Image (cartoon, rainbow over the protein chains, first blue to last red):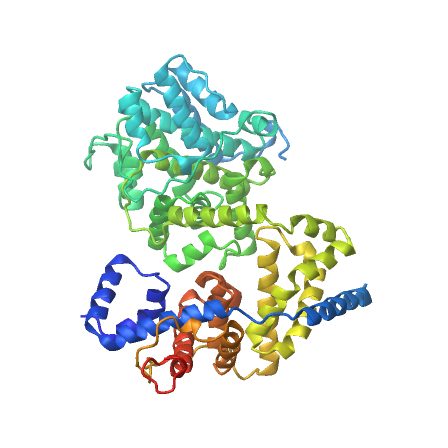
Length: 79
Length: 525
């Protein structure tokens, strides 16, 4: 038997597709039987898509120029 | 480079004499291969060029050459090929294996006692080193040569092994087709390793273990680890001495002797000849170990004990990782600028700053969760990179190295800001139970404009405790692999995975109200 708790412990590996075949079959079987875990799996996968697509903090062009100047000035000071 | 001196100069050593006796017994003793061919075979191994009078000689020579020079590339099926395609008998194949072992024994011993070796002359000259093939790690390796069983009382050298070791290792059982050679080997084993000489048996066994570990010889490490256990050395201790270059638990002079054995076995051309009776004895142990490791690879004996580590599989993994990093580094678009910057070219360094400051800024901001800190952090990273540029080895891409430094800077900033919240030690984590479990809408990432979504993600991510936020940031936003993220944070992969799971579930929980398919007033649903 594969419990909801065991499923949650493997959730990260499941969404990363990093589980061995034998475990995958247990997981797939559990998902066909448990609606709550199916929702959890689906929404976690969607969360990952959102995180990946959101990307990171971007450096604005005007900050970028100022920052480069600051870095180079600080290196010259240390020479 | 070793200096060459005559045998008369060196102090007498019973162990070296025993190794020499084994070498001459194998080279000139009775055996199925004609002595002239054995000589050609040893010369072929030494200078890397095969001279053979027929197809069988050519096949046996090519096999022995690779077994001696690149033992890990020899696959399990090759003995069968010699038998079927070259019509070599099991006795002939066994003797070819012994010749490969003999070549390694001689080369190691020559380096140890400072005698010129044809092999090394070829290495420094123009002779071609055979192209290295992939390491073969077959899980199904099995003994491939026939070997008549010798029961207790039937073969005196085996009775001696039973008396001295308590058992006959499968490596020796696999050689009963050539009993004279086997007898010489077991005599040498006793005189070089099992008898106390200038050095105690325990230290010689440890040297053998460390050399076998350096040669990724899983079989010999398992056998001699067990033998050391019977001598009272716990397996954890012998493992540590075998694998850790610091050789924990050994006295300084013992460590020097073990290191000398490993040096002779792995880089004989760089070693100075032994000058003391103790180091000569160690040279004999290194030569014997090289012999045993080589013939083991050729004979595939069944393991006598379950190995504590699969060294061959580890070597295969390490080679893959090294090849991948080298391939990546070889295609490093920054290599030219880095080389110029290292020579003091300020304009080149300025270009590197402009090219990578956005990446560094993003990383510091992501790890700290604070764009305010990121400008100072980015400046600190480049100052550090400028000072440490000479440490950059080129083993990875410059941008990978830079990202690692940026992650560390971010973590340092976090620690300075909130030293109480540790990123290192996780308390026991109870199972995280999600509170909202309604289905989500399809394609939630399309519900908001990209900038709006980014703002939302950033806002929600900022509410996570640092250890979870950093794990999610590195893995899911910066797209590092699990092992890269774990390495950057100095935590085991298992810890990283635990934090990642918790962090992802927290993010899911935080975003759930926005994407609930059943929510009234949900945007556009």
